[in-house]
Image (cartoon, rainbow, N blue to C red; front, side, top):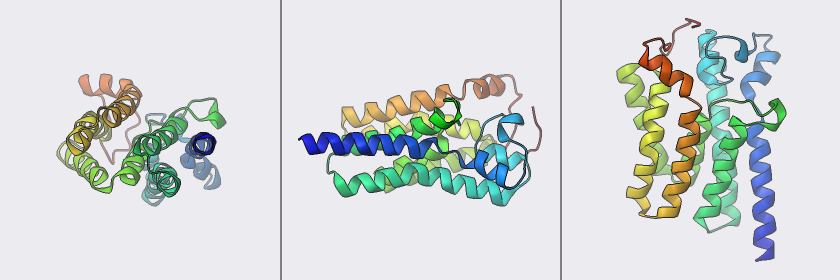
Length: 203
């Protein structure tokens, strides 16, 4: 039991630190590009990098952010059988991305990292969430709306998959945090001011 607790704490801390590493800020500096926190949505993430016109970098950032959520869960499965602790370790990676220790606790919105977490936890559930995002994005071309819809359905999908209240509540908390980070986007969507996917408009 003591070993379980100690190992859980170690992996939770590692997951948080791993999540706190922001690839969009790092790669923007390496590529001598404008800081993603200074244009577009001011969000250091793949969607905002896409607004710079660098599609390759945006895709790279997307993959890295997904892996930030996927890898801690993948590693946790090696050490634990308890799905709750595995799920928590993944969620902590998302918290690290949103509230990173390296950037004064001001990070991204956590959508790609959350997707990676779900993909690592349950591949089928993750694919369903990915399809939800893609279908919404295809129909409306708003990244924020796609994220909000997907995160809204995540707890529902989880309940339908597991019928487990604890697992569902953990993803419900994750969804609330990520959706809350989109509060400005929600206002923009309501006022028809949200920038569409692929647009370089820097509103």
